[in-house]
Amino acid sequence: MRPGVRLGIDVGKARVGVARSDVHGMLATPVETVPRASGNESASADIVRILELAAEFDVTEFIVGLPLSMAGRSTASTEDAEGFALRLAQAGHPVRMIDERLTTLSAQAALHKNGRNTKSSRPVIDQVAAVILLQQALDIERASGRPPGIVVDPTRRT
Image (cartoon, rainbow, N blue to C red; front, side, top):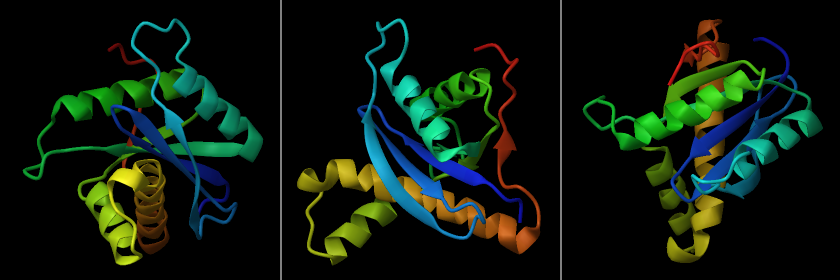
């Protein structure tokens, strides 16, 4: 297992869920929910906030969820997440993307089990989804001995 804190990022249309790992890559915990910046902002406030968190936690890598359809195909959400991951990579941090199918549903189910409804829990759901995808990535790396997912090339053009 590679050492270093990783940030898990669950990109949504309205919010971005953020989770972090411990330095040993054993456990993912929620950090915060960052509002998505509107498309006309020159410096995306969402990217800026996530880079602030990366500096605060001395992050070595971002793990960004790749939302594919259940059939494994790209969707509009896939393209949005890929663009977000590319902007993080262009800011100078290593970024990997992992398949995140069902993480939001898993997060909703976990919160429902604990008596929380979806509407009042939306910001928390985003954080829980980020925890689930980051924990999945950590578990894959620990089991396989290889870093998970797909590396985002910061030189790629959108």
